[in-house]
Image (tube, rainbow, N blue to C red; front, top):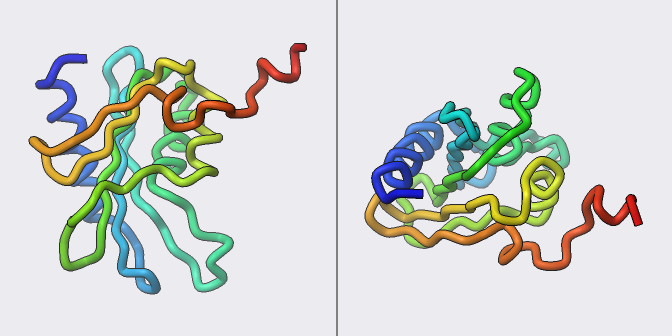
Length: 139
């Protein structure tokens, strides 16, 4: 993936972050999911007073895409931090990594960023090396 695409995806994640609903944690997360055909689905985290009903930005983006019939993805960019600003990388939680593993191959790219010029890029296999997937059910 070229640097121009990475930076554009990060910019979309920052845009999605602005819509986060976080009255409890004040930790805004945005995600931009790139489909294999070049479309982008954005997601933000949405909190709930019961906490368990909260949904992460990454899953919001995946669920939006899947609900539209899209199941072929190439990358996701994730940005997150307190209302006061982003000071560190926001890595996907375990549940989000599991959802990624459901829909993506192990070469799927996960980009975490603090700014358009300050990011890290991983393969899905690097952030969930021993993940449980449909492959396990076939054996």
